[in-house]
Image (cartoon, rainbow, N blue to C red):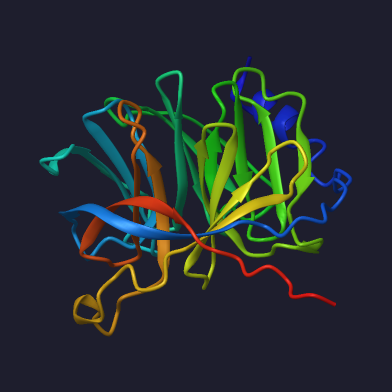
Length: 267
């Protein structure tokens, strides 16, 4: 299929919104965290996407006009293996790897870029009629966010069968959805300006859990240009969760801790 035809098929139905699922009456579970491990990270990276490609390769997308790049590290040594600078007109955003192809969103330019995941050789590009924010995949479909409460997905091979879901938390739209990661049967998402990660049911769009990462980065590690939490990656071998932020000096391996929710008293 020609590249233009592929992306045309992907986004033909982009603005069709799926109906929200029924809102459950149970409170959404809340979680805290424990730091299991941390690894030094280049604090100049304006992290927009974080993705493992196998157990020993970590791919990072760094944003900024005139400063955007995509980089592959040997993990956990964090030696640079490959790097490609983006054209100055691009502000790099989320990334995901499907069948040895690396997809990368750009913010306001409306372009989705596709590379060879091993060499970062460009393979294709196409236009999208929204902003590009976060990106992930379920093995067959590529899912992406545009900074609203919507998650969209399309067939990674044909670009067809686009679906859109609206994400809700306690029955209300969850806006500013950013970086995404597929974790088990769920999508985990950063939300711009929030210190939490949101666990989303991809079938209903309902948030099924909220992970509060407040205090993850020590105040002593914050500089004047340190920015928000952004970046979630699932290690494919041990299924550990790694997170970081924009211009953060650490990659953190975190473990969830269930928080107690006080039961209502007698009426």
